[in-house]
Length: 564
Image (tube, rainbow, N blue to C red; front, side, top):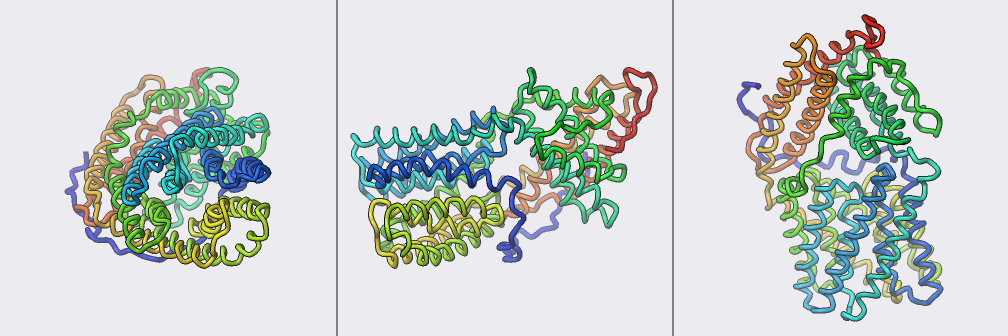
């Protein structure tokens, strides 16, 4: 255990910066997949409703269709389960909203229910790590449905439309499986190799602290790859693919632990070979992978924490969401805006892991929405020429939103905003100026009130979680150090301990980064964090060197090169 006293290198009040908030990133490698899936899932139901002259029902089919945006990074077996749960969650939230709308037209009650639904959706999406677009799409649908007049007799039919579209979205999401069944896990492994190569290439060009972000990114990519492989079957034909990919992820881990002994170009070459559908590259050291894969099996056999334990740390963010969404909706009502759910959804979209990230999202949301309102003014005359053009414009904006949002959230919002405005006109054209004014006002109100709620609801548990993460990292390091001191540890024990230490260090860095972005928190144990990371990474390097010099089980005394 580190004996450093818990001191802080940061002020309890952090400065909120605009630097880099609107900077564009490189697009996601699979940006076109969610974009095409979204169009493929939305187009048939909308075109069918257009042919039937019932575009007013499009909100219910879109509830199911938008589920196709989820789970694109998951292996197909896991994707099937995740999409099914997303569809069920979407229909559940829609059902609560429709029943509430049929029982009362009191706007305050509707906003309150919408805020509570948003908090539940936020907590569940974060706890289950469902991935982008997270709770925002669920909240958008349920909040909008609250303000659509309903009768109890209409609800079964509307839910049936959503369920049918949800089934279609599930089929769209699973459609690539027969063509490239191992695509998601190959991509995740390639990302881990590239991240490890980036750290290895940068290592030695400056102080070690300068490369901490690259190292943290590398370990995060490796952990994401392991979680992807965890979803694959342990037996059968797919198990062979999993084992081959495991060996490559192990090489990425080795590179992160011993960057000086790593050839980055070789890692990149392996990553490039995984992009296609060809054979998975071999590491060339399969006999020495026995202990490594035993360690992998130990990690993959570990079960995640129960859902209730994962929900506990999310209580402050859930409280922020409930309070911020409710206050944003009430403020919109007080201003006489006819669609308070726009302000509610704006607030719901802000809340991230900490206050600093929430501030960044608020800026991005306001900039993107206001630019989107201007885009709507340019598109509306064309869309109003006919309902067919209205549907086609929505589909084009749907594609643009998913294609651009990985560059930066605000850029995707430029397309999302006019699309949402056009959807409100499926039941009938409305005054463009009024829609623009209401959306702009609700955006500013939702962002301002939502962010103020985040300031008021502090996350005082963040410091405690940093202490716990430091303790976990110290224990994992001590376990690995004890095994290193043994002349012949049990098969797989050292590798499992090394990977456990890597997980603990990844969690420590993520927890420390999250806590550092909070306001009004108690002083963080920065010295302990730094010492735990330094000693932990030294132990990781020692474990790599120890396993680099070990007898080949089949050849007696052959020494294996550590170079990945």
